Amino acid sequence: MFTTTMKVGHRASQRVAAMLPVTWIRAGRRAGCFTGDISAEGMFLRTEAEVEPGSLMHVEVRVPGGELLTMFVRVRFVGRTESGRGIGVQIYVISEDDQRAWTRCYRRKLAAHAATVPATQAVSA
Image (cartoon, rainbow, N blue to C red; front, top):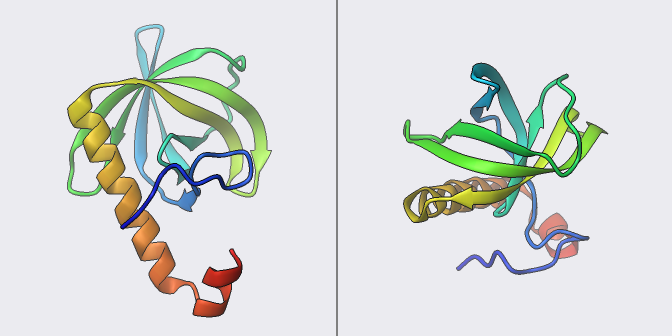
């Protein structure tokens, strides 16, 4: 059983590496990028684009299996992280069906990551 309410640093859930294709719909144009990591509540978008923290972004994310999820996300961070240069966002508006699909994707990525971490690291993480 997974929980997405545990605190990990200042986040409500753990981030896990994931490279998912994302389309950012901005001013009628579509720009592609990829996630660097995801959490139950958001993702890091690897991009050189600039946007103001607090802004809303309309994005489509393709999850494994081909399902296309549409959501609005709020910008929380713009800059460089261990995942590269980009934009950290929190999911703001998403349909119930897409939320369930996002949660399934996150839990699968988290489980796959946990299976690759040695037991001694998993205990101390």
